[in-house]
Image 1: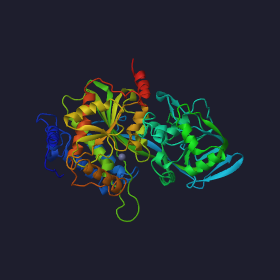
Image 2: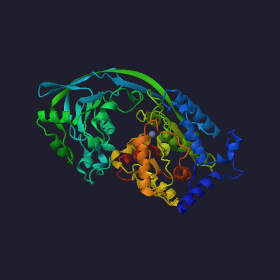
Image 3: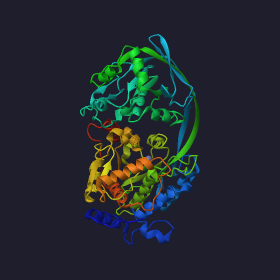
Length: 564
Ligand SMILES: [Zn+2]
């Protein structure tokens, strides 16, 4: 690694923290590894070790770590060896591996969706007018003359006193709705947190709620601002295979069919039914909106090819000394998008996304192993698979946890840690969610750093990584990483570095390890995240979601059943 000269008190403090972490007392228990020459540096959170992990995991040998590939084998072997070296216990019935089943479903692209509009048939073509899929794993889905109901944004949010399904029974019907939420479209900060994307704005939520309501199908109306991407993105990501956990074993209902229609199709459909799309937006943005039954039905004959695959999560546990039945979870996804065929460099190495997160977990694990006194609560180190296929590994773990969720104090997610040098801030994705942020703040205070919301809260990144599955189940979830107000160069330099990553490396072959990276900032991030877990593992507190958070009710339900 290359170290830049330390120029400020903040950097000196950071360096002191790093040194303190490395400086294991001579009489402390040593690591169980055999590479004796390296033992002194393998004591805790250490830049050289972190770099070595990232370099190995993102090397061409690991072929982009695609599930089911040689990269999976290499990653499993690497993590197993590291967990053993650290003396961590297997987290799944004597094994570090937890097999995650996945069903791959590809809808026939010649599928036609037929609407009867005011008695007239109208055919919507896959790709140009609509996309549609089933998440049931069924090879054949048939829907006949299911009535269309416009349900606004399709939101049922008791804590906000908002229910687009109030007074309407959509059992067996096809619900049609807008993407995002009223706050986004009205820019009214009093409604659904204004421009910031809420849980209810995510299209995934809308299908889940429609399934809970018993609908036969759910159709989201695309608009570029609301979705934060154009129709091409919808079309591309919904063409080809879609990935799910098998429906058996999932307690949540699934929709027989779900999809999108273009804004143009929606506008002309609504106009033929005597409604103006803009007026529907206005109506749906009002509190007390009432669903509108439409004089139209949907018929669909959806053929799909399906196949079943598996890929493992890796789970290791450091048992607590006095409260071993309660746990703090550190999580990162090991998978990336593999080796694609084509010209030139075809390996999507995934160095930042997410070799950094896995390396971070290993370094934090090492710090816990060497910690004195040892943690009182257990600490779980979870490397999940199939994140890039829709957060499936974490979804499976949440349904089959090593420590019951009601005994899980918190989850801390590490995904795509920026390695751009030390910063004056630390970014909390989904800032303002839970009391975990108060504990994180105590840590960053000692580093002379401030916590900050992510730059684009309207993109909803909080709902797009693995901790989201824990959040939905009620477990407080923290997703925080390096800031962009760099000690050297300030916000300008930080944002330049971040957009360089987004534009030139993110999900591209260029996401590669660079020996010239400045590791000071990422080490501070790991120290802070370790500090949160160290605090939680040493006391009896149960941090909660903040009042008004959509996941608080789920936590109260979870904890209620745990309380005697
Ligand atoms: Zn990632």
